[in-house]
Image 1 (cartoon, helix red, strand yellow):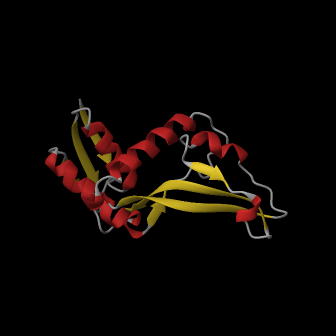
Image 2: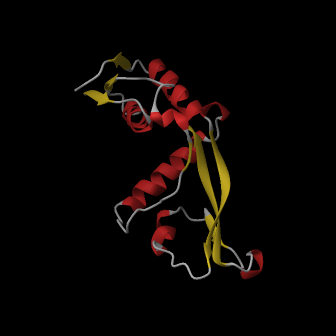
Image 3: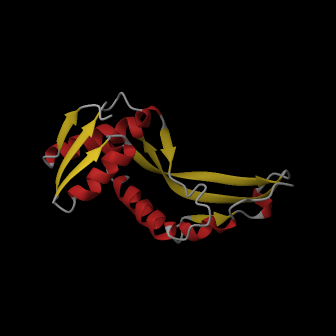
Length: 157
């Protein structure tokens, strides 16, 4: 199947990567390429932020988590698994209590009270991917080039 993707930020390149695994004929059209992209300017922790209780995301989150975990086995990708401590202060309500269901089994644990400073009501030790996009995007471009993905610099209005 011939597929054209518009944009080559993290969403466009990740989409191209997944589709390239299925041996589709892919073309990416973009106004700019790495490093001249918004996606290139920050590292990103993977986390099911603001999923808003949409249970469709459970499978998506677990699937993408495992994919990034696999990428972290290759130092060249710029992806690593990191521990993040998530805490909730006393007097603050946690807005999305079901985020646990979006996490793979064994990827987090609830901290014991003796592990928290007194101003925190609860806390979590979460093991999640860190994506350094300034490394990952060029790695994806190189991979896609090797898969004969066509890129075209062009603005679409």
